[in-house]
Image 1 (cartoon, rainbow, N blue to C red):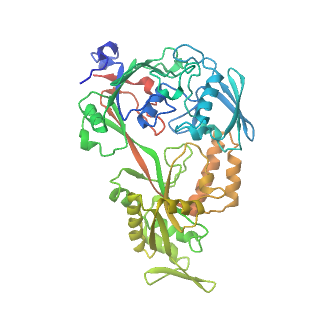
Image 2 (cartoon, rainbow, N blue to C red):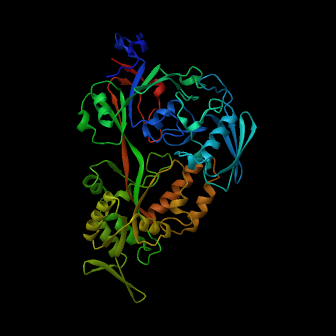
Image 3 (cartoon, rainbow, N blue to C red):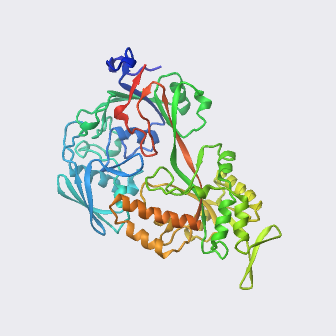
Amino acid sequence: MYSTPNENENNNNINTTFEETQAQIITNLRLGICDFDTMNPILSKNKNVQYYDKLIFEPLLSVNQDFSLEPCLATEYSKTGDTTYIIKLRDNVKWSDGQPFVAKDVQYTIDRLKEGIDSIYVSNVSAISGLEIIDEHTIKITLFEETPFFEYNLIFPIMPSHYYTGVDFAADPLTPMGTGMYQIEDRNQEYIKLVRNENWWNTAKTPKLDTIIINIYNNPGEIFNAFKIGNIDLVVTENVNFEDYIGTIGFNSKIFKGREYDFIAINNTHNVLSKKEVRQAINYGIDKNNIVASIFNNKYFVANGCLDFGSWLYEDASKLSEYNMDEAQKVLSNNGWNITSRQWQKTENYKTLRTNFNLVVNSSNAERVSVAENIKNQLANIGIIINIRKVSDSQYNNYLNNKNYDLIITGTNVSISPNLNRYYGIDNMANYNNEEIIKSLNEISDITDKNLLKEKIAEIQRTTNEEYVYIPLYINKNVVLYSSGLVGEVSPNWYNIFYNIENWYRQN
C-alpha cells in the first residue's frame, strides 16, 4: 500500500473561540479518483478530473452556484455586432510559474480546440471564425454567424501558451500549470499533490487549505472503501445507492441535480396532439414519481422543464409533474371528448378523432423502453392508447431529425446557456409554432440586464408550460459525500463542486 505526503506537514494548531479550544485545524484535503487519464483539462474525459481541474485552471467567464455567469480571466465582454465580441482580460493575472497571463494564451487555447482535438470543449469554440489580439489584454472574437448567448460558451479552461513552446500539447505533460487557486506540485502513479498557488490573482479568496491530495484508485469500490475508513474526505458520485458501500453514519451528503434530462417531445402539428387538452391530459395521466421510483430506484429527480437543474432563470413549473387521473379525464370531457371502446373519441368536421398514439423509443436504451411500457400502462387507465415503436438507433435518429413522430422519449445534457431555441424556436423538436414566442426568443439574445432577461424568459416558460409543449420526465442525481470533520459550506452543482472551498478546512 502506498503512502501520500505526510499529513502532519500541513496541520496547524490555530487558537479559535472558547468552544473550539483544543480542536486541531487540519489544512489539507484528501480526494480520490479512478479511471484517471490526464490533468490536462482540455483533454481529460474523466468527470472527476473536470471537477478537480477547476481548482487549477480558469476560464474567461465562470459559473455561479445558480448557473449565472461571472467574470474570471475576463473582466468584461461586449457584443459589438451581430457576430463580433470584444473581451477585456484581467491584467493582474500570472500563471503559477510567475509568467503573465496575456491574450496570446486565449488565442493558443482556442487554436488547439479548433484543430479538431478530442475535447469536451470543442463545441464551445465551433462558432468562432477568428480571433484578433488588439493588445495584451483585449481580444476581438468573430463568429461565423450570430449565436444566441455566445458568452455562455466562454467557460472553457485557458492554457499557458509559453508552457507548451516545443511541447506536444497532447503528450500529457507532467505538471500543466494554471492561473487558479491551486497548482500541481507533485504527481506520480499513486497521487497528485496540489498546493496553494501563491501567484493567484484573487487575494480576496485566500484558501485555508494549504494542500489537496488526489489519491489514484483502481475502481469506484476502492474509493468508497477509502472514504469509509477515513483515508479520503470527499467523494462525488452518480451512485445514489452509496449507502450500500459506506453505511449511513459518520459522513454528510449533498444531493444535487445533474445534466441528464429526459422528456417526451410531442408533435404539436399532429391532428389530435395539436389540441392542448389532449397534451394536458397525457401530462396529468403520467405519474413521474412512479417512473423514478419503480424503474430508476430513485436515482433521478422528477423534472419540471429544461431549466429545472438549479438555473437562476427557472420559473416554477411544478404543475408539469402533477399526476391526477381525474383531472386528465375531466379536461377531455370538458372539451367534448367521450369514452368509447376504452379510448376517448371526438367528432370534428365529420371526422372521428381518437386518443391513440405511437410512442417512439430507441430499443438500445433498455431504461427508456421500460419507461415507455410504464407510460403505456398508466395512460391506458385513463383511456389514452399508446403503441410503442421500439426502433434502431439509426431509425430513432431519423425520427428525431425529421420530427415525424406522434410522441418520442428523448433527452439531452442540459446547457448553462439560456438559449431555448431548440425547444421553442424555429424547427424545434415539438413542431411548436408560436410567433410571439419566436419573437421573444430573438429579442432576449441581446438583453444584458439580468433582471429583464429573467423576466422575459419567465414569460416564455409560463406560456409554453401552459401549452404543455413537452412533458418533462426526470433528471439525474449526483451526490457529494464528505466527512463529518470537513468544515465549511458544501454547495455543489454539476458545473463545480468546490464553491466556497476557500473557507473549507478539516477538524478533529
